[in-house]
Length: 401
Image (tube, rainbow, N blue to C red; front, side, top):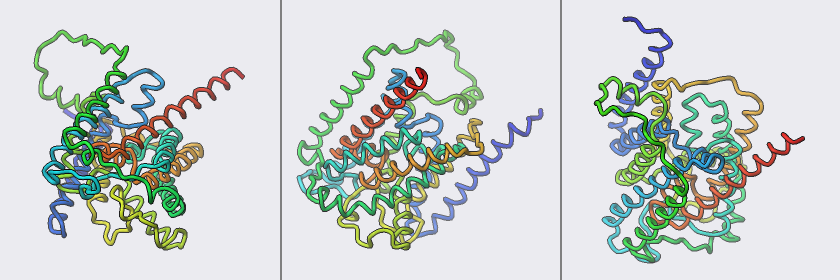
């Protein structure tokens, strides 16, 4: 039996990339901190596959709800947060048995809460609307051949540079005196867990309001053959809840061997190193490196857990895109470039000023019990709602003209 080349070639490339990942992991074992580096690469690869196959994207999920009334995507985000909150509570409870005000768990994405954080969230959410994705989704869509994502990531780097230029003014004006609120320090682990799960339950109930789950039309109870199960993994998309559950578990497991999940530290560090080399930003960024979050301190080596997490994420998404025949590159237009660059600048400024993006500040911060994560998330989704409303209004006016 022969198979057409266009069918087998993507599978061959995907297998070759998997083999390269395994070989790279073997090489990393011999480097300093090799086990953590291998874990970061593997964690990123699994995360990339999950994000690509489940289409886990904060902007797309919000858009489905605001425009079509489909709550599945936002419910998946709620599920990811709920699973992560439980996982983080278990892990942090073993590291810091008695949480106290002024004493924060190391490396967790717990940032200051001020109007600057709100503006950062609004900027990030607007950037999502303009560019069509959040930064994490742009990373996995890069592996799908997206023509907007490369420009959006370049724009994000430029946005980081702009954020570094405005940081000292914002820091001295508001951030320096802003409270850093870790909920377990004020409510205890049990109280923080109940409050956060209670809020998520209320959000889930509100999203579910008026939503009727589609009934299954299948009446067969036969066990499908193994080949059919395998093929189903690489056709269509995975259920929303699978993506939410997997992202929550990965986020909780990641902190056992490395820093919390984040997808902007390497990009921000590279932008900072380059901009300082050009003399475009101050050499001293007041208080920035003292905050936990997506650190942007220029690295002495690129063999860092965050860099390998990103490499694994793109590689894993590339494997999934090839296996599912969703690698569909095309030549970009000027509009693609403009949309990506302008949206990326807003994403980058918001991520730098908010000390992370929807993965770092919202997801990892919310899981850790940081009030900053919940505030940033509320600002992001408000900006998405407002941006989509504005786009709809423009379309209606054009249609009526």
